[in-house]
Length: 333
Image 1 (tube, rainbow, N blue to C red):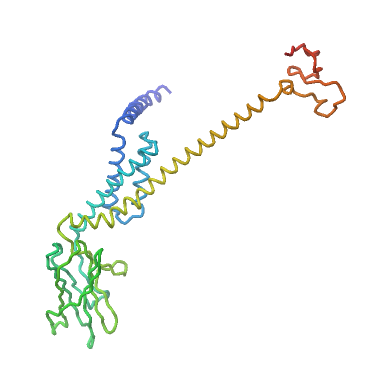
Image 2: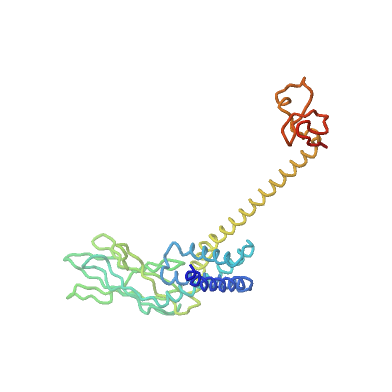
């Protein structure tokens, strides 16, 4: 037992040291910034490694609330203000991560489904630029069977503001390889765009894009090289949504639950106090003689007999006008 106590003593001292440091830190003005900083770091890691996760709004809000509560920040107003500041930080983090992702994304090559695709090698160049840059979209169409009819070759360019479907022009027809090369050139006004190609092959529309699990996905690009130009739509359509429609509402609900529980507790306490006050008021109005415990005789309704009460010391029936108990000698006021 002594050896065990000797081993536990240093552990207890270490726990006490860290406990004292933590209690001292809770009294400093750095608790809220530290809580927001930790939450922002976790949010950044989730944006970088699991950007499409449904937990991206839930986990940071729960984490921020838990850290603030452990730091002793329990006032609802201060919690809400801290949540709003954290939401602004999340807007900044989300914007930086997404702008960097858009501008450094490796461009995919569009291709139609199948082992021997009809539409392939769909690209755009350059992949970044500005509103005066002429972007060139290229696509190769190959007739894999004799008599195959390919018409209405076009490129569909989608931005947050509009969708443009433009017919492509033939620039070369290689009869030896049964391949035809198409091109479309134009400037773009939106800083963030997506594109895919399409054509009617033997009466059926065929799409060339990036495919995931058998479903086509438009290829992101081209994107403007100016970070501020890209940041504006990112903030408007993504960052504000993630911060104030995913993160902050959950945090506000937690604060609302704390407020309601405190209000409900106060209501219960007030109800108990009112009940106690009414009980005391009723007791104060009752005559002192009525507070004496009635005898069994009175409880049984034997009103004809001399009125008595029960001695509080020995339980014997005592005449109502007695000054002391005839059984045990207890004196009465």
